[in-house]
Length: 605
Image (cartoon, rainbow, N blue to C red):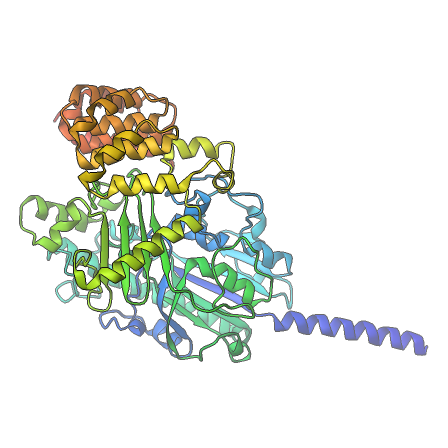
């Protein structure tokens, strides 16, 4: 009998220890709002109506320097779910599904394997092949309430209210007065612009109420004291020049984290603190693993800023832009606590390239109309013009990023420092975003791009040097670019042709004509576009039209971008473009979207 009692006692002790261990592991709740910079009272926005978030911030840690890695949802969410920098994975282009290496797990899977109940309600948009095994539930009904008794949880709730689509239909009645809304200096004072801004503030207020409801549910379930709560925005937004663009308005996001009293020691700052620590989405996955005491995988590229494995603050926050829907662009950014540096690698493309989804907001067209009418000042006009190769902004003095300091000698040292930080990061992360997508997509069909970058076949230093010359706008590099147009690497040849587009270099004519016979479509298309600007229009448009019939979808998108840039002279390509137009366009039919715009704008009136 004594042995039986002892055995029962031992079992009870083991059970109690396991239960206590499970109880000691914090629950994690993520509340994510769509498309918003810190337009919140707690961040100093006096026009915002956010009582729930303001109250939450008073007992939490508010991060003043939190940044998404991309100024748009899918690539930034890829960062969040993998803990890796998308340009190093080949997942930077908007809504692409290029695979990641098998060792890269969506991080909730590590929690699930450790006994956590993982739920997502409900947006994914992870910009790569989905990993269903990461979640116990992922749907618009998913909730932590379905877990087993005592089981810790990681739960995500995505609040869609503030998404840019909330501005597509103007509301008749607004809570926030359009006549009192504070406009940034780069936006014109049009009725549509004021209305969209006011409507967006209304949406922020609605989102704040939804946030408050989720917090109340947590408290009513008796879980608040065991749950660490993250609130953040998934990227900046939402009016033109914010979402999709490399400024503070596109990359600076709110981040407020509450740690209950029993977990306060997992942070290095106290509740109620406003910290200036630099944090990016690259740090979120390792931070969650650090909070629940799961070893952070070596492949993750961020640093934990909370928990048992937290690291010292990093000096820089990095950002990127690739293709946005049907429009091609390529930029990289570096941010420290005072400056934002932007490197534009396709500077000949204007900021405000037409993008069908963005143009659904009435404010965008009103801004474009004002530009065409010549009624804008220099700051407001910049959006409709070509980009400089480099931009540098003093965030403290210029929070809206409108005064480029690149040519100011007082900032020469900071420019050199940040330029080097960008180049070092590109090399360290083995950024594959410099491969034109027409080539990149072919590689990804057989090899994860991260693996390709490490295969020895990717000479990034050589490519970056060529891309640097190509985008510098310096005619001194013309001869070098002509020489590189015969390089064995097609990516180098692409950048050489692109540089001749930027420079409109007539001395490159012979090399460009030769390049229209290149075996890579991306090179042929870039060469053809360059030829148009040095008055070889017939060959240019003929080559671009032929490219519309290749099987490679990114190549067709590239050709349509070039034809749209050319404008009315590209009319001979209209019939070929019409064959690409689909009546019902799918999410990935970017060639159809680009073709639709091209036909609509330059077809017969």
